[in-house]
Length: 175
Image 1 (cartoon, rainbow, N blue to C red):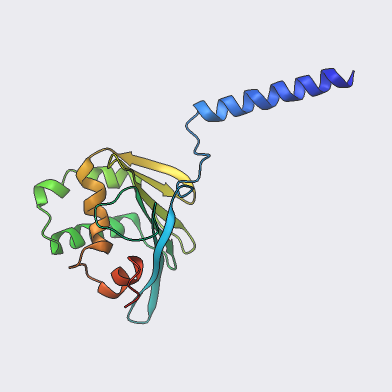
Image 2 (image 1 turned 90 degrees about the horizontal axis):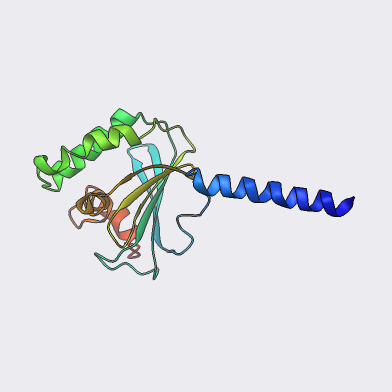
């Protein structure tokens, strides 16, 4: 009777695994093939806003090298609407054309959640330049526009970004 129970349990396990694989549930770690390049904390006046970490395949920053991932661990609550407004403000400062970023705003509105202290948002831009967002380890959404991921990462990695100290720490300069 024991072999029947083992076979039945193995069969049930296989069914569960196959169901998970085809259901779209993210089981893989989006950072598994990447190495940490650098990390930084954003502080604005007296407030800690987030801790951020940049990853790529080599662990050394090289502009335009993909895949890259940026992980942000939030230290305060932030509404999705405020995240989008801040993103647009940063794109304006980086002289990204309005006609370009306007088409991304509805996509971000569908993807971004309201953030609570302790939440993690991660963007992975793959070598095909498709972008995928993860929230607390679960897939949030994908954007296939090859310009989006590069433009989004520029907010932290561009030489003209708003927080150069954070940029330098993320890319491993520690200045």
